[in-house]
Length: 499
Image 1 (tube, one colour):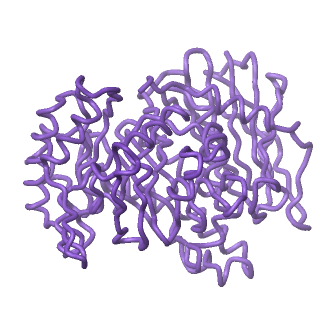
Image 2: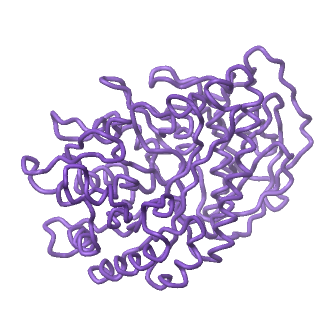
């Protein structure tokens, strides 16, 4: 795969879609307050640590009858990926795509390679239905190349030790052993493959610690060592990610640390009853407060993992709000959730000294509101959900090194980065009704150029329900260097600054 760099496609797509920045905003009939322009955000230019390009990873998993994410993404009549999905994914510009999840516990990779008429369909044991396996390793790698993403494969880790996945109700054996995983590495990475496309990143185990039916800690550590040795025997240069959640991290590192490069954990959490489908429309201010409070919960989870792992690199390979409702929470369709996810993305950058891979949301699907991309069926056009719009914005305007920013008022959530002589701010105004304005300096000096890219809907609870009607467009504007930048209520802003 080509080396991942700062995306030009995503930036171009964002700017082409941008409209001139509005002079003001209102929120659904409520009067807004404007704070005095008496603050200055000063960017400290000294780099603190390098930022991984994989902090905006996306996660693709076949979800069967629950949400046909992969089958709905593929046009079986032309044997190719849906063009609308490819188009919107290029705007999203994911630096990494992960294949797997719970599905990997009964996925046999050989069934989904080779001539299509010989591929064997499989029963989706977790999510229901039958997968055609017309989309397998090579098709997934095709997609990664189309959108410029690094692939991450989650292997069949002996069905995580779960007997109901290892042998299904029809008596079919679904567990994949260490040799099968090593053969998968050879299929992709060995020079003898007719068209080798090396995969550097592989995950061993997915949520292994989350059920008593699966491997206990000792068994998981032993299996991690076995799989790692077998896979590295084929290609010693691969990057291996072991499962380290639920208090397993320290022992996993002690026993298998010399064989793995990162530890994985997940964080799928409920921001509270105020955000449920039954409540958020009646009391939107309470829902907003609960979403904003979620940043402390998310930060606490990463802090907890850091305490267990020291300076070991971490991979947050699944993360999002789990809002109650028939479709995992309609609030996720609103801009309020987009702003909240932007705060979680800021948390990821703050922990970028150890966080190598991070995810927010499921990649694509037809129903669940946790998706980053929605695929309306049967003939609707794919579109970005609010969390996807934030990911695209931040991905296009993020530096390669983290830097500090000081002086922001308390209701602005700010992180900063730089790439050469260009600096970037990510700013979330956490207030529902107060606009903020701040001057910008770099090391106390005025910048040469300032460009802002902003999402600031007039109604923070506006929903995005189709590709044709977007109530939350990106707006862009260059402003004079000595002019204060305005951050409307509930807005998310990316700022480019040249010294």
